[in-house]
Length: 422
Image (cartoon, rainbow, N blue to C red; front, side, top):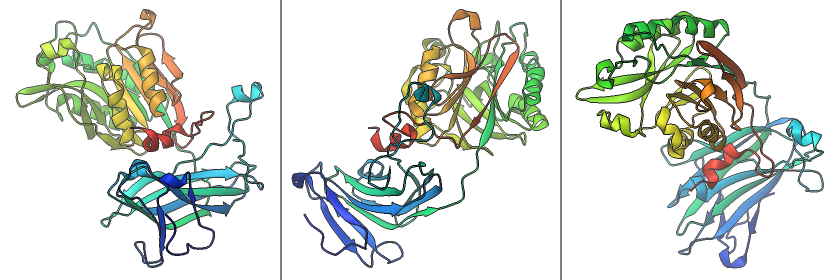
């Protein structure tokens, strides 16, 4: 299948094999503004594959913004319509990354700059989705090859419009200080006493300049308690109590509670903002047998919440044994996942961070000596950034949410996830 109308200067169609070639067209009056659109269309067969390509000149070490508008008919654009930006030298060869790990340098390894995958942003009422991102060109790069690829869908069409790659100011870092409390008030006998026990720890986190602090699962639950006995409305007494502390110390708090809603009770994590107000809640989806036998009801939603520093998701304890919860939160844009937890395999907590390239902040009921779940901040690579070792302690780690994690042979896996996951 060939091209009906000549494409604008610099753009060319590329196929992988003639037998799976889609049809390429250029519409001079296409696109949302009528200023032209590059089209790729398939017939009734599945598996067709092809791309529009163009090379843009760049200066190594400079930041660039890629932006395009995309409309997809009869296919899932997440996988069927993919942009790649490939960094090349003057001879068209792949270049090396400037930010390879220190360990790679010590081993004398050169880490290739893998393709970057701009992310899908908002979609307008006519179905045009912005696909965009900002990158710093590797220092040896002199050109960027932009690929607008169509993949695999039958009876589908993808249109691309207003494709640009332009130099922009460098994006600033986005630092945030993530904190975890390692404490369970085992001696406290009432919900009020158990809440009060966290007051000095929240103050300590503030002293360490935490922006975001995670407390354990079901903080009002203790010796002799029942889930039903400590269940409360949300908002309610506990969110009011911890809201006052969040406001006093100007930080976000995540607290594990038991919610009562009409005839149902839920194991929840709540997010409270620095204004003292409830930002939102998450109802634990994966329930262990003990909670099922106690009459707790599972949740069925994966909310994420915008904060002044980034996007936050919540999960609770047994959720960590299953990849689906963290993945759904990541799919919805979570950059940080708070994890109030009684106990879990810490390898699984690390996996949830690593497989989604998110930061996970856990606060556990388990003693550090038990070789089980820890109170810690896990990095995007799953490695423990900080861990609390003693009861009644707080740990804080500063991270930069704008710093990308690149893996050898994969590159920025977080950006690849939407394009490659099932």
